[in-house]
Each structure stands twice: as C-alpha cells, then as structure tokens.
Length: 405
Image 1 (cartoon, rainbow, N blue to C red):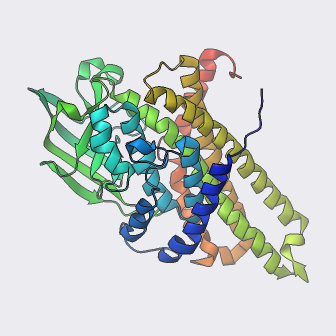
Image 2: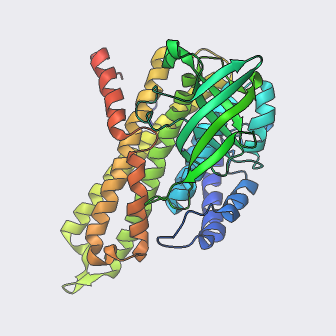
Image 3: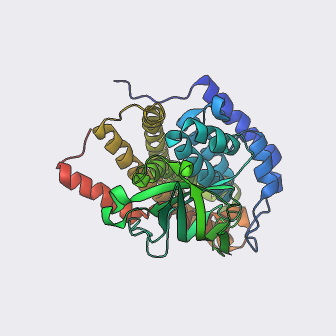
C-alpha cells in the first residue's frame, strides 16, 4: 500500500493562487494587532465569496468550486496561515453548515439552501451548543413541537459563530425527549428572517476577534417540515458528521497558525544578535526550532491523511451509499486525534517562540505574537474540547482492546 501523500497539480496551483490572493489583496485589508470590538469583516468576506472561497468542497453543480475536502483543507490552511479569525468564519460557514446541508439535504434543499451558501450569496452557521449542553451535547433543551405540517422551535443557542450575520443556520432541537440523543434530536434549517428568531448577544472574546460569536433566541419559530435536514430523530447524525470534518480542519488551521509564527521566529533569530552573533546560531535555539518544526510537520501530515479519508467518507454519504462502520469509526477517531495534535502542537510552538523573542514577544503587535497567542487558545476548546476528544479516543480503544491499523 502506498503511504506517500502528495497533492495533484490542480491542488498545488490552487494553493499558490490562493496564497497570492491572500498576500496581495486580503492581508492589507486586515488591521494588525489586537482590535477593539468584534465587527464582522464584510469587505474581506465579500471579496472571498466572489472568489468562491465559501464553497470550495461543494460540487460545481451545486454552486461550489468542486475541490473536495482536501481542496477545502488547503484553503483553510492558507487562510489560517494569514488569520485565525477569518479561517473561523469560513470554517463555521462551510465545514459545519454548508457541508452537512449538501451531504444530507434533499435535491430541493440543495437548490434552495446549499447553492446560495456555496456561491457566496449567503452566510451560514451551526447552532448546537446551549448553556447546559456544551461537552454534554445530548443535554439539549431547545424543543421542536409538531403542529400540523409545521414545527415550532423554542430555545436558546450560545457560542454560535457567524450567528449574528447568518442567513441560514443548522439548528439541533429535541423532537422526542423520551428517545434521547440518538433518536429524539432533529436538525432543522432555520432562516434568520423567520419571525421569532433573535440575536440576543454578541460575545466579547479574548481572541479570534474578527469572528463574531452570538447568542440566538428562538421564540415560537415556525418551520415547515421541508426544513428538516435528514430524517426526524436523526439530527445527531448530521451534526456529528459535520463535526468530524470540522475537527480535522480545525487541527490543520491550528498547524498553519503555528507554522506562520515559527517562520517569523526563524527570521527573527537571524536578525537578532546577542554575544556577537545571531541567536539562531545557538544550539539551544536551534533545538527549540527543530522540536517545533517536527511537531507541526507530524500534525500536518496526520491532518491531511485524515482529510483524505474524510473526503472519501463524505463522497459515500453524498451519494447515499452505505458507509462501513469500521471506516466511519476510523474517520471519527482520526478527527479527534488530529484536533488534539494540531491545536496542541500550535500552542506549544507559539509559547516556545514567545520565549525566543523574550520581552519583545510580550509587546503588543510585535510580529503578531500577541494575536497568535490569543487566537490559538480557543482551538483546544471549541468543536469539542481536547479532553473530550481524549475521552472519545480512550473509550474506543478500551472497547476494542487495541489501536486499529
């Protein structure tokens, strides 16, 4: 079996074109350093939408670019290399909203909802978390009561990325409490223009400050049954499938952010002199840089392997074909692993690089170290905390009695 992973010529061209677009057109538009407030960067988002960057994995016939999950991973890596906030906006829109809508949507839903989200007309969001349903995602209080051919939604969702600007949201709600999470939760497609939909609050966060995070209130929001995604009672399938891909992307985005800081640090060690020579010539500095590089390289390779497998998994789901349980478990396990690997490798890299900079690294705006330090923290928390990922992996390993090859 070939273990080598390489990009196609089309993927390499996509990466290079995207990197040039970001460096030449987008990077100058974003303020450097810590910013006050959380104003959604519409000018940047609109420019990215026009380039098709909000629908990269979605097939062309549904309004996307048709680059698959690996192409989407390339895009997120390049965007996160520039700014974690913008990567968060795109990830919440594409990975955990548009992608599951495409995978589980009917032909009519794909035309009505997926197309405008993929072609850059609309913004999407994913609303699962509640005050008492964070890591314990099954403990949902939002309800959806059947009323004729309609459903009435009531509840509050928190920490909804893009929630204040979204046109369409994937919302998980309880349709039968007696059946629990595996049979009593349904996913609905909610248009923000619906009566009873309200943005109650936008959080003031310590990091990813160009990305907005909202609290959403649903007060007797009436939806037709056509707004159900998938089947009644199978809402967790869509949510967990979306999060599998989302965690892979999050891990890779974290690696990209860590890589950007490492590259700046290498340049700094060449320019900064102490004791008559650049500090980069010191063995202790070189060892630190080598450790960071090894961690990031390992995590990056693992992320792309997981992305490749996830692309095959998603292709099977989109085609309505059966997914073998061992393969589905493999993708979920890998997604948990690479989220841990990527986010924690980035965290350690940023911390070690700050130590190399010394007091200079503690100064606001110096080589974006403060922003990177603030931004990376959330990557170990959202889309399932890293300790929850460890719990998922550990329980599976204990049940199997070995690590599957």
